[in-house]
Image (cartoon, rainbow, N blue to C red):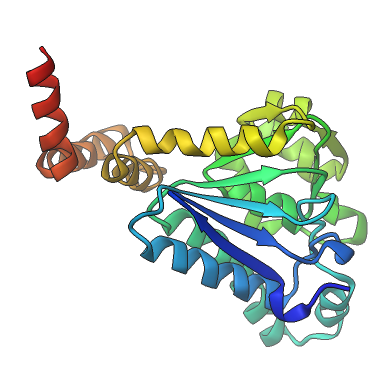
Length: 256
């Protein structure tokens, strides 16, 4: 059995912060302790200026199977106020992923279902093994993947989103990539090394520029074209004044 005091494993390897959901015997199902631990690890990674990318993965054969049985039981017996508090806690996790300065990447092996699929979808980048499975089966038990809808609708087309959410079916990695839910697919046999190589590519680009890019991309969501362009002007000016930009321009001019 997994030690419940270590439901989240956190490790920094050079510029890569690795967060591992560590409930393999429960298929890394979400509960209060895991959600709280994941939030804490994300904050810790965000505070480490050496970190260039965060990788979230699952111990064992699955990424995350969604809420565990005890959490579902608690939901069914909870009051309105308790359910609001519980839902907000999950919302805070999804929003925290977007507020982390550096890219947050989900490395999905096995199944990413329900809230687990929501967690993957909330990440900036999703890479998957060729055998990974994705799905939102909530409707099968009368539940609604409500907060995830706001994320998914921004990731994929409206009709694809409705199909995934309303049918509750699982799809494979190739179909998920075709939908736009997955960025890259890696072979199962070389998955770990491929994930590491992909993550380390962020060492070759400016940390501050990537941070500004992430902020601007999500900030302009929902803005009019003119508003987005004006916001871009501000970000452009900020980027020009950063140390990374000054050094990068100097290197480029010297090279020329």
